[in-house]
Image (tube, rainbow, N blue to C red; front, side, top):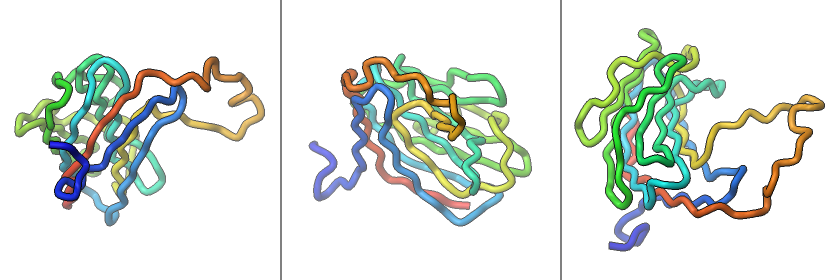
Length: 173
């Protein structure tokens, strides 16, 4: 079946930029705890990445889950990265992220199997309010004089395209 289509309203992310990314965010009512569910399909496992984050109102990134360019799903637990599971190209995955501000912890389930249990938040948050889907690594661009002084090599040269589909996003307290 071809998607997105008239029947399947999935969101397609495609990225062949070496230093930029495709991103979609969804804002939800400010909450102390949240369950974010979604389906994702990667068209490849060897290039590109998809980062899924639950954010605070101010943009802190306490919950971080990554579909890496190595066919692995990883999650940040405090200051360390945990390898949580593997994924294959062209196979839908059903994710469930459960986050709790009071505990400062979150869990990740993939296809009904808990792959990360009670991971510590990567950054402190006093509330949760957004979910972000992004095809590249987080970058903090500053305004400082020397922060971005260096040119990025081969910035105009495309890299192999990475394609992801997101569907059935459901957010509940």
